[in-house]
Image 1: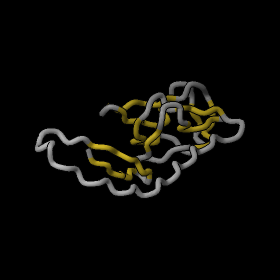
Image 2 (image 1 turned 30 degrees about the vertical axis):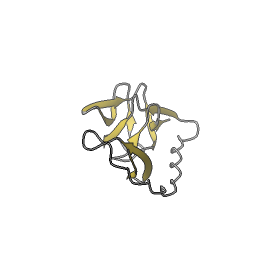
Image 3 (image 1 turned 180 degrees about the vertical axis):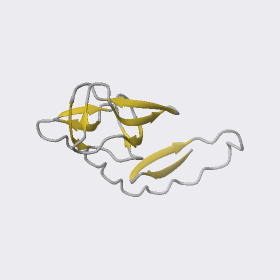
Length: 119
């Protein structure tokens, strides 16, 4: 097995890879000490008093359809999230005005992370 530190979008991940096939009797090289991990960035806070529209699943934001100050109604697409090679619309569940956009295009988000905040 080999250990690697992989950095994706500024986040460092420790990864262990098991080699398939080949000569398993050969001694493995001693793993190198991993570089210190960067602390994960703190989630962007939702605007005070606003109602967040959260990501329904883990994925990558591929488009943001609104900006701060835009009026939205129930069912308006606010962003597009790519997950499992499919694009999913994130829609507003109420009427309001966009108070904050909490993500950037190309950013990875976790399930439940705020995408936009409405007032």
